[in-house]
Amino acid sequence: MVRYLEFGNSQEAWEGLNEYFLNNEEEILSKGCRNGSQLIAFDNFIKIRKAWVLPEMDFGNTFGYRLQKWTGLINNYVNLNYLDILKSQILAKEGGRNPNYNISMQFDNSHGHGKNCLLSLTFSRTQETDIPIATFHLRSSEITKRLLLDLLLVQRIAEYIYGEDQHIMIKMLCTNVYQSAESFCMYDIYKPLKSVLEVKGKKMTNWQERVLRITEEFKTIDPKKVTYKVFLRSVNQLQGLKGDKPMYAKDLLLFKNDIDYPEDCITIAQRKKYKRAYNKKLKKDGKI
Image (cartoon, one colour):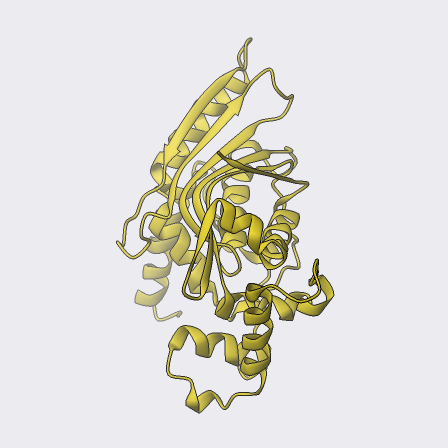
């Protein structure tokens, strides 16, 4: 049986899923499992009524991400040439007499280390709704550190195709989504965990106890004693040891208009190619 959840927008979906995992261990285990430090939910269908991530969402100071994380996500999963073809196909349908369509793109896994977590994205116009639908198919997703960045990628792709003013719905199909206690503790930076904790019985569930125990431990432990790199990231973020290095969602784009492009240089792939040649010439001329 498929697990169905619905949220107003991408930001609410990310918050809702994280807090759902924290407070519904028994329900998740009825159609999932516990594997070490992970709580896993299988066969999930998540409806997001609007593709929208909070522009001020700070991936840098919350998770310690740097811009390379975003550019690596694009470079690994998005074939820019194919995206331009997809855009032209969709806009041709949008301009037709009967704008009903289902047009898909497969995500790449160019560098091998993406583990094929993102599988496909299908854009549709149907009689179900008067707005386009992006059906997002994932193999697996870690919901605290990664999911919101993936949803932002879907939003940016949709904006590139339809324009920034078009309201887009997301239907997310994911074989499994999971929460790791050692990563989820960083959610405390975004919103205090105790403010979203729901104790339904006389005592906390095993998962709630584990999450709170690890969070308090990571806030006080000597970072030099942490041997696992993935745990050290959480420790550094919770203890504020990496300084103020914001990475806001509003600044994470498919490409930036930071130079003057020729009028006929309009697609992402064309602009990437032009910018490489542009920077190469500046370097040759000693200007950078």
